[in-house]
Image 1 (cartoon, rainbow, N blue to C red):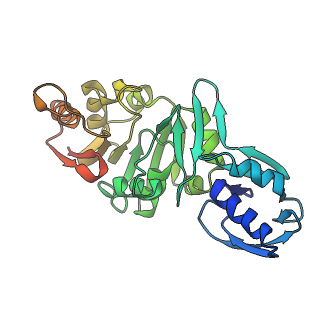
Image 2: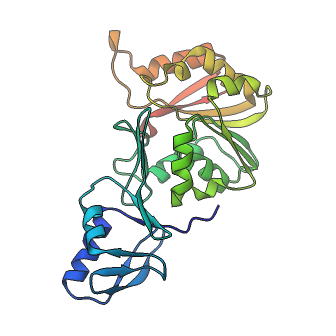
Length: 281
């Protein structure tokens, strides 16, 4: 999928406004959310991007005033990458790839690491060259992209939210999933997984929303479905989130590990730096 927009957030807008204030005629910036950099002309109070797209000082001030927002300029139209409806969905800038935030909840590991890199680390726990991979809660598609980079022959990438799917079509960092090797599915994974054939995947990446939003995806019943669709000796990486202590000192991740064993997994190993576990069939 091609993406021809220009992307801005507060830090970039401040950089451009500063160059305008100094009377500079050109500026070197990223307009694709830190994937690359380019040099663009400044003419008076305008940033010139191409024949059809330019930003005025007033528009740049608008962007500068909206921290933690990403704006896309395409076809002369400036829009903020957010959607309000059943929740508040937005792309949030970082020093590298943007993250997805839903109603104030950040859906990635992002402190001290790029969301794209952390998703890649999750995929690397279980994906090998030639694997068929199930990505249960795809989000922006970062784990699916990483699985391709690791040599997966096919990725089945499932996402329930049409709003999230629309946002990722706008996200430059998500474009890797629009590939012939990725089967994009718009469905609720809890229902969809029951339709999948037994022992049809070599690896599963399970990065669900937090327990309070999708508790069913942390239950033994769902874990049994993951176990069923995995091939013999297949592996699962399951992001559980920050462990928190519950009664008798056992943590949330310990309880998740117990349910995974009850579902049939022979070994479950904590991966503390990724806030999750690797489980082996």
